[in-house]
Image (cartoon, rainbow, N blue to C red; front, top):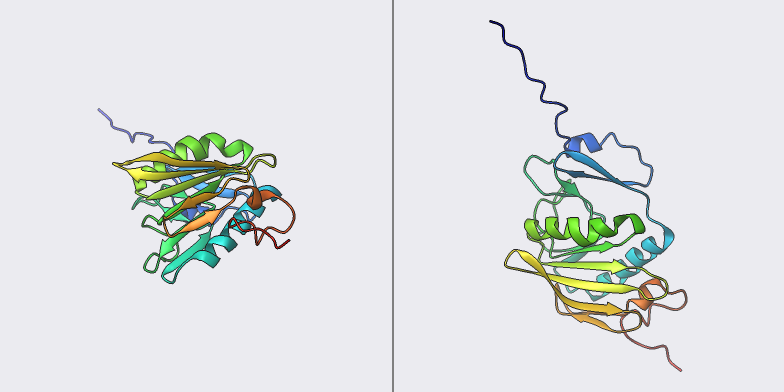
Length: 200
């Protein structure tokens, strides 16, 4: 009687394997040890991310930090790794080389190829990980849209849905007012993104 080794297939990938990925602008994430690759963001996506980062950084009280595209390890095996477009962390939230604790807020800016991932897959993953607040922004030029979700009993509940030039307001993770239109529209946005108006 002879015995042989069972072929268990390829081992799960970890964040260590991501160090070998090319610097090509694409986003490399891991889901249960499998590679999940997204194309490089288009200009409008980057505009929303940049403007929201600037606006939240301006509003953030001491003790909060706004960070673009941080890597987050969701498990101790480092086989589940996501890169939100934007997060807000508290004073004790910074970690190297990647976050391992839930940020106070995660933001995803939807691209055409990421709609299902952002609205469904990441919604479940971020809720399970314990991120208290999750914003999903759809940067449509005609009518941009912002959905705010909050964690309640292990699941996200939609607490607001704001479009176009309507004013979005929230108290979490700190008081924020913003107008989705001015996250995407060309022109003088700085005085308007928070709901203000340019002087006549």
